[in-house]
Length: 126
Image (cartoon, rainbow, N blue to C red; front, side, top):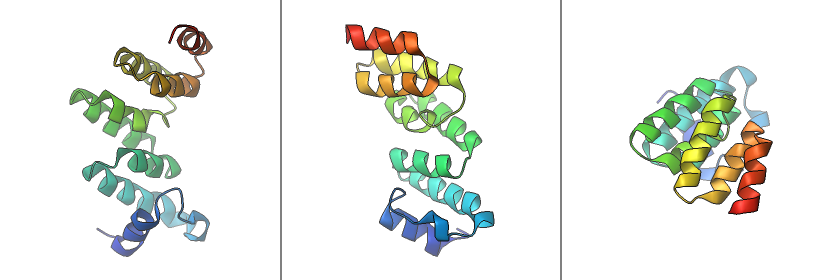
C-alpha cells in the first residue's frame, strides 16, 4: 500500500468521521481509492462504497457492484451502486434487491435513480 498510514487512519476513524478537508486535494482520490480497495477486500462494503463515492471513482463503484452481483451478493452490490450515476444500473439492481425482500434498500436505490414511479409503487405495496 502506498498510503498505509493515512489509509489505516481513515479505516480506524471511519469514512464518515475522517476530516478529508485536511487531505491535499491532489491525493484525495488516490488515497480514498486505496482505502476503498482495502475495505472491499475485507468485506466492509458500506464503508468501501462511501470511500469510492468521496473519491468520485465511478469505475470502482461499478466494478465492485458488478463483481458482487456476479457472486449473487445483490445487497452488498447495492452498497456501491447507491452512489453510482448510472440510473439504469441502479434501477436494475433495485428490482433485484426488492425481489430479495429488502424494501428499504430498494427504495434507497430508486430514490438515487429518481425513479418516482417505482418509489410510489414500493411505498404503496410494501
